[in-house]
Amino acid sequence: MLMPLAWNRNIGAVGMAGEITEVEHRVAVAKRLAANIRKYLGELTPEQWELPSACAEWQVQDVVSHLIGGAERQAGSMERGRAGDSNPPAGFAPPEPAALSATNAQRDIDRRNEMAGHILQSFDASYEKLHHEFDQFGESSWDTLAWHVRRGAMTAASYVELRIQELAIHDWDIRSAFQPNAGLDPDCVPVLIDMSPRWLGMCFRPSERLPKPVAYRFDTGSGIYKMIVTGEAFEMDVGETPQADLSLSATGEQYLLFTYGRLTATDGIASGKLMVLGDTAHLGQFEVWFKGL
Image (cartoon, rainbow, N blue to C red; front, side):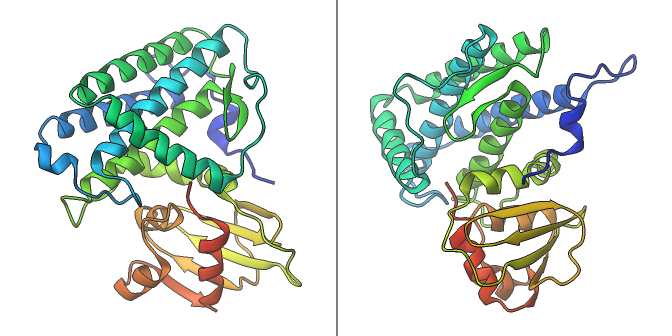
């Protein structure tokens, strides 16, 4: 079971006079991330757009294409949700994660070629429409459901955190192509740690049932998570696990880069970014189970 975290229970709450709610804060973070990425992209040379990003098989321009397509699809889904439609498209069949990832990767490369010469204009248009949807939900209810291909019907508030995830991680993917010490935007780190169980649930790739479950302990600096993996399923929640088979300690940023597949266990341990106690084979298996999307 993936446990909802506290902010989701009060997502529609009205703050005290002069205060903003958590979802309003997250909307502001999402909008600022998009604006920062747009400014950064406007300063790139034509050659830099074609450099490899941290995403396998994607150039910088392909990552941007992905961010544009994601904003377009999200805005469309949220618009349908406001109209009361949170159902899957006709004929929808749940995709296998690996197959969907490969299809999406090629789709974004193809779309990049279609947008050649006006990719920044497309970025502007897609995020203007998405931010309009955010504003519309701000006047109604963030509990309204909208369709998502991997998660099914989910709340508009969850879509906000998903956009922060996409922008923050892919901002790092882009910047790390030019800045070896690029970091995650500090405002997004608490959001991504908060949604960590939900993210890992999206990218979990089951194996055969294990003879004995594996217990993990993750210390992110701001909180501790426990995870039990049976091979065919897993449970993750906030709190201690009495006898962890593997304990990992890291800053919130390095924990996120590891769980998003941007920092390998081998490199993280060698560089001192990941501190590990226990059988490191469990860390390698973690990377197999939770392979990024």
